[in-house]
Image 1 (cartoon, rainbow, N blue to C red):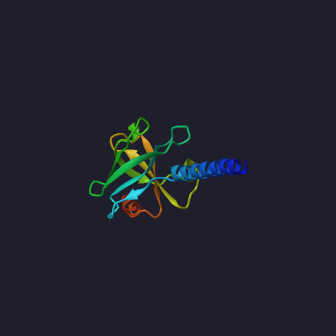
Image 2 (image 1 turned 90 degrees about the horizontal axis):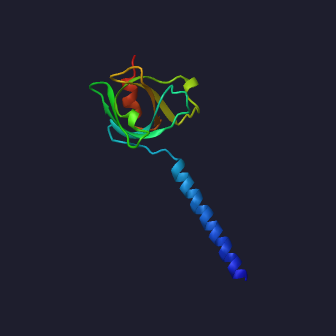
Image 3 (image 1 turned 60 degrees about the vertical axis):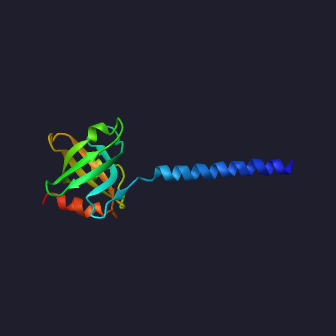
Length: 138
């Protein structure tokens, strides 16, 4: 009888530990940056939509010569984010839900339609931060 109880409790402990690891891995944001910082995987969302931002994983190619950021994203939620964007600045703190010192935020506007705005979220330790800072208007 005691062997069965130990077996049940060890099974519950294993499932709890596995669930915790899965939750921790899913809560982290995916990020990758190339050596020169011109390509990265980051988070992006449309801005000023009235709803809470839904961050979508985006693959960015930063074209320093043309001062544009080209975004590729997968899925239905990422469809409006695809295309060329201009970096127009950093969003005001009132547009951000959480002020995280480990993240850098950038405001973007669509290259062919300046009325469409988006926010880009990159870890502060990323190599892409210096490249994006160079694209900020002076």
